[in-house]
Amino acid sequence: METNSRHETRNNILAAAKKVFIKKGHSGARMQEIADEAGINKALLHYYFSNKDTLFEYILFDSLKAILAQIQPVLDSDMDIYDMIRAFSSTYISFLQENSYIPGFILHEINQDPGKLVDFFSRAGIKPPVSMFRQFARAAGKSKAGPYDPYQLVLNILALCVFPFVARPVIQGIFQLDDKVFDDMIEERKHEVPEWIINSLKNG
Amino acid sequence: METNSRHETRNNILAAAKKVFIKKGHSGARMQEIADEAGINKALLHYYFSNKDTLFEYILFDSLKAILAQIQPVLDSDMDIYDMIRAFSSTYISFLQENSYIPGFILHEINQDPGKLVDFFSRAGIKPPVSMFRQFARAAGKSKAGPYDPYQLVLNILALCVFPFVARPVIQGIFQLDDKVFDDMIEERKHEVPEWIINSLKNG
DNA sequence: GTCTATACCTCGATAGAC
DNA sequence: GTCTATCGAGGTATAGAC
Image (cartoon, rainbow over all chains, first blue to last red; front, side):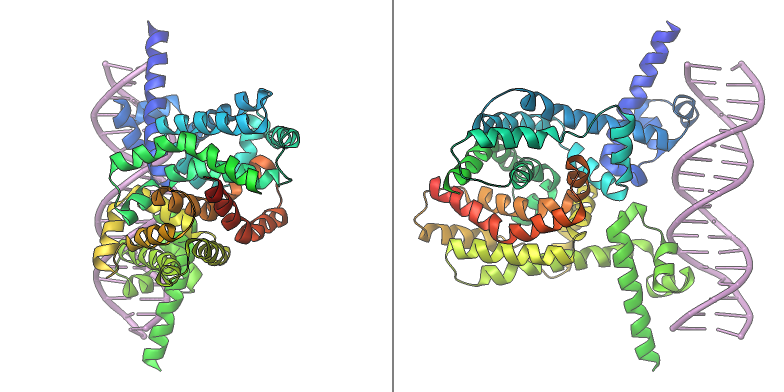
């Protein structure tokens, strides 16, 4: 009972912290708001997580882990380059549809302090997926397409998948698109993004 | 002399504020840091700009204006779609090379408060460039390429041009690329981005 | 216009009762 | 484990002398 309740409170805090930090960022978030969101008070919040930075780092690392976890399975398969691009785009965009604010959160915070990314890789027991490039390069080698830089290829795929989520309010605001239109566009991109890239490769 | 000095101090403040706000964001920036950067003290800072929000809004609007100003000239020309894409990509990326942190700044702040974009358009005397779509759509109509959604096209161009600047530290950190390699990649993109897009259109 | 000094407040963190 | 009350640092903004 005690342990269960303790566990539950901790989970409430983590869910609340995730919500607030991802929305407001480290410097914009308030411990009071996290406590409110979790249905507790600041003192209890500090009882579970002694300070703001500890809690923040937990959320940031958790978000990084979630994002990177989406990449790994695709890379571990031995598809050819085209199928790999198709599989990656569609699963990645689907994941982002359910976690729209994670990319902006990560990009902003790592921009504020790139060292946090180093900490993540060294302390969270996760290695940078340099293998991603090797995989892409290897798969690219097997294709009939001409030579191209796998670094640029990966950057392009990420850009086309992630950017709409990072830039959503700006794009909608500038071009006057309502939510439904934008959501539909993203849905289409699950199959359009890989086709655009593949078309581009075939003509390169 | 007085007026000149006043003007100069004001410019120092604006330059300092731009630097600090763009790097740290609204909630991360400190008036003290801006004062230090401008070589004055907090009191004088408040003498010129009565409060933080006023100063912030000035910088944000100024950044938005600078970004949008890059788009307009290309749209006002009557190039065909391919030349338009080439001209846009290369001038936009060149501008971003000199203003790397502006996109991340704008995206983050507008995400925090999309209303600021509305304020910008209504108060800064600038209209949303919906005409951009019309221009692209018109130019697209003249081309031999098959039908495609101009919204997606614009989103793709922006993604490929802007994303590397927003995601720079994350990309470099994850894929272990040093500054020179990354800078070279961006330089290449000035001509590669439009070619990829055009290749993709030709095959669509 | 520019400074020093300080008021006032928000926020992270702790003390201590239950 | 959870609360109320409060401290102290650090932040924005102002008062007032020069």
